[in-house]
Image (cartoon, rainbow, N blue to C red):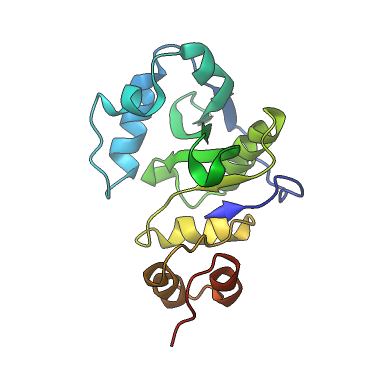
Length: 181
């Protein structure tokens, strides 16, 4: 999914008592625990964190966020990342968004997503993309409500989006995908 501009982000505020903080050394264990609890579609292993983000903690301190419960426990994470190879480069990437299931449905994902998008803009990105799965309907609704649009590169992707109820015709034409019959 893509957000062609990081301007005009929807308003989002955290419920009382919750906070968002940046990466701190040792957060690899928090990230892994959050993803193990929240992600049923991908194999989450102890080495995945460093494979995804490398070992530059300074970079992580600039780009990775943790959602914190009133108790101080890290219960969610998202990263304001980058990908120099996506569509010619220069895109910010919303990467590995997850909230522990027991904390989902409490209005926490929108403020976390807003923090990541604001950080991408602060770092000089003017647009953003993310990757997600059709098997994550709540995430798809969140991203669409936040201004992310389907990014369709082939007709099979258009069929999936149509099945999910997204208006895809303009995206099909914009990306040169053949019209569906």
